[in-house]
Length: 523
Image 1 (cartoon, helix red, strand yellow):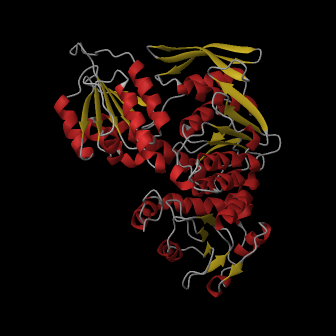
Image 2 (cartoon, one colour):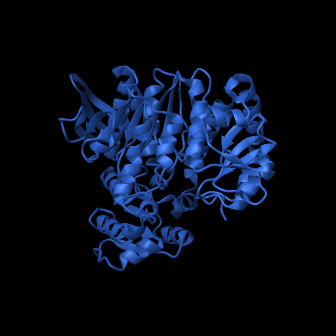
Image 3 (tube, rainbow, N blue to C red):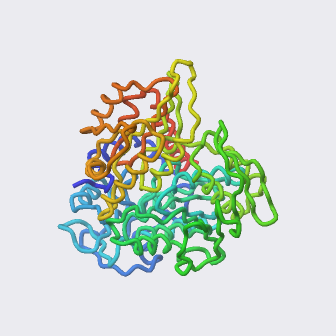
């Protein structure tokens, strides 16, 4: 069984730990030097967090040993740790953890002859223990970003705002599960003033216990959609999970929501700041939104303050104006000056394969937005891509084409067919010339939808087939190719095979993650 729901095998984790052994070693040394909180035994930690537990004979002998970290079976696993059972961890995963140096595993019941600390809810205990380490940095203000879509971009734009004025730390990638939150709380660099965390609702309890672990002062709820629908079974359950993060906030905290579509105020017990791209009764709103050849331009109005001609460079999807408003509201809540807020917004750049636009040396525009997707984000990507002005760099293509390469939407349960049919109809109503896909869900939906004759639909068997069919139409100077789908579709494979130059998008994101990891370990 895979060690994580991301299908990272134990062998792959072994390889990751081996490749990062110097960072793990430095991590161990630095913790012992800089943080008095790490001089604590397992027994002391259980007592300080007020945990009720039973202990197996194999684990009892380790209770007096100093614990290096609390972790799960993932790429951030550490020796001399308490390793926690999560819903995706099989017995062999926990056995692997003990073999790799975990002092004990925290579980709901005894597993074979493993050293087990048995508790009612490992998820809850993990969050409370991470909070213990987070509170060693009580001077640090935490901002939490949650919601169905747009979390990573929102987090990174808020970081761009905060760092104009404060020493700010955030993971640049989408590491947003509870196990990633726990790692971050145990690795807050010295002298940090602001941390920003991204939290996925993923499964029941994950968002809430993540918020317990970081104790946020500011919360941004980006959108409430149907991501992870199959894990919850209803829209109401998703809403409750997302809004549950506000229960663990600082009492003087602020929750930032989109007034245009947020309806769940009775589930939020905190001060609310409403932002909007359409409603001028919101606390902060945008006006005069328009596209330029360089990206988006708009005004921001916040009470008596107005900022005119705010620019998002090389960004064309209009929902990013809403993200800029989230960043503005978060900056204001955290004490950033208005001038620095605008500076941070305008300096923001996309990273990796999220809404990133790359022009190849042949003049082809590659719109890479293939890390994740729901129907709303696919529609937004189509809206954005069909409004980008197309021009030929080399003057060789008199009629540039718009080509959509779509992947299936994952984890939407009973909504699968209707959602995919809706997406195909949306492409059909756009100005795209081609639609390529290989996903089984899109294939099934396409059989139920009649598309216009001018939209050339190419149904493929797999990603390799998409690459070969793309070669047949030979994208050229001025053409735009949009790649959009859930991460499970692996459309980055199509992108890299068809446009090798785009590898720089992958390497830049990877370099950013390594730089962040070095910072949190060695600073």
